[in-house]
Image (cartoon, rainbow, N blue to C red; front, side, top):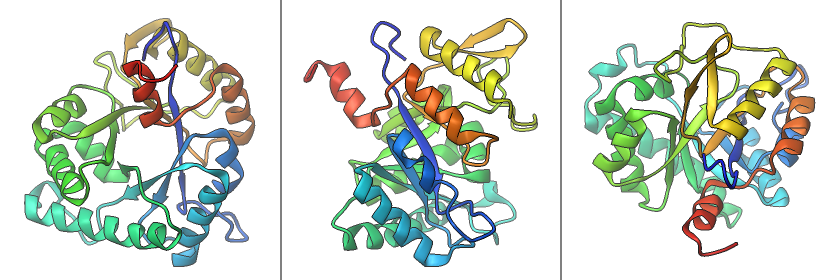
Length: 256
């Protein structure tokens, strides 16, 4: 993150989490983020939830990304061949693109989810296989990935556009790697303080008064976090979120 001219994308997931009335929990948060990741998997809301999420994003002029998963049938992800990973990725991107095309829109980025995200953040070959599949679908797509060496090396190996992501409620270790075994942070005051420090210093804490540097193009907010709406409202007072591609153009000097 450029600390002399702070810019970052805020992103959330849509068509993934639903309340008791089967309403997408993320819809009320759209005004406070700059990009959304719409689930390519059919969740509780069904295919209609995907369509409705895209329609909301069109009305709100939000950048749309595809949220991709490993199928439930895959019990040993690291045993998948590159061809199998490609098929999984292309199938989902094709599905979500059918909805965006019908709305005269395009997807701008791809974000792995769940075990796919975790493994991609830890395994270079797995990450590159995903990146190659995404690029085969469209060379213009941006791949979101956990900030760190693997996503940077993936960028070079696959010659793909990437965005380094910080998940604001995840704990990190001293090597700037997400500790997926740790419980998520769910205290709004702690998260707000953490966000301020990240934006001002480009660092996240890994222990009390101990920080580690992390590159950051986009910040992910968990739709299911406690008081997430109020938290995002406060986050917008700290930084006005802008999409990744916009920020990269600004950083290039083409626009002010």
